[in-house]
Amino acid sequence: MIDRMAILLTMTLWALANPGQPAQRSDPARQQDESVRGGATIQETPARPAVNVDEAIRLAIDALDRLGARSKTGEMQILVDQANDYIEAIQASDPTNPRLPYLLGRAYAFMGRRGDAVDQLLKFVDTRHGRNEWKAYRILGDLFVDEFPRLAQANYKKAAALNPTEPSVLFGLSICAFKLGDTEEAIRLAREVLTSDGGRTVRYISHLAALLNSAGRSKEAVREAKVALDLANASMRDYPGSHERLLAVDAQYRQIIDILQARLSEPSQGAVEDYLSLATYIRERARITQMLSLHDVLRVLMAGVDKTSPDTPPALLEQYGIVLAEVGRIDDAVEVFERLRSIDPDNAAATRWLDLLRP
Image 1 (cartoon, rainbow, N blue to C red):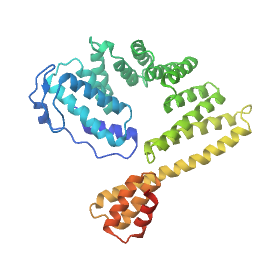
Image 2 (image 1 turned 45 degrees about the vertical axis):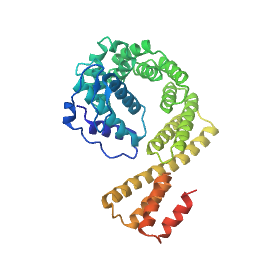
Image 3 (image 1 turned 30 degrees about the vertical axis):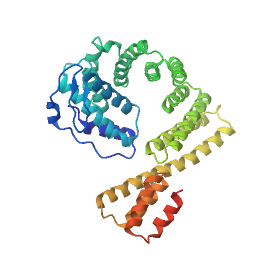
Image 4 (image 1 turned 135 degrees about the vertical axis):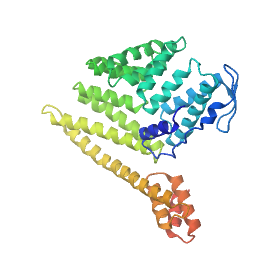
């Protein structure tokens, strides 16, 4: 049985944004569902519709893929529950299914149980089904890359043989090349990543900027870091109130500031434009830092509201609503101010903020 709580906590820390309520551990009795193997139906439960084993595998993989794509934090508990329910159902119905180690390995990887994940995925890629699954090799590469870059490289290469244009695989190969001392090859692969990805992913562009800077090509590094920063800012505007995206913007400001400061510290480098750019980025980052501080305030107020609910004092609700509005969570702020006005119809702050926030 997969521990939902561990997966949810891992993903919440990873997302660093407005965690939902922890998932509950699954009921061990669920594993006793009367099911049959193969394509026959897995019995329906309140949390899981009736499907056959093959469909349960597809649905579990879909949930794991969406978790891996950094879904909205509010969706994570739903996705964790879905993956866990279907994996448990497959375990109960068809415990020798050849794809079960793949599902378990991916789930263990999310939980941070690296050894268990590696064991399950190695077992899977040693089967007829597994040796043609590029994502299993990619995940093995991800699990090895920090400590064993050569072993990670071997797995990324197997993944690339099966899916040669997959950005995440090329990204892993670029990291390995850099760790193994071949910076120019790492840069070449990083450019391939951007071509394959279409330049849509902040971390890929940021990775290229870091490589260029390490190679002493600071002017190119600044240009790529600026692209990454613009992309992170656009994502933050698309998801106002997202703590995760705010952190991503802050990280990009840190990167471009560090590159410019290092560039200006070299006697033969830097120009007037670099000083002006650095000053601008430091000023802009101060605004992001302030917004991050508001999220810290919001967490304190949220804890107070949760602790005092359903009889939360109006003063606490008022401050909670104000900070929700200030961080950009407008719908949530409107809901809080409407609740405040239902408790205190003459509350001037609620009326004023609702007039400001509602169209």
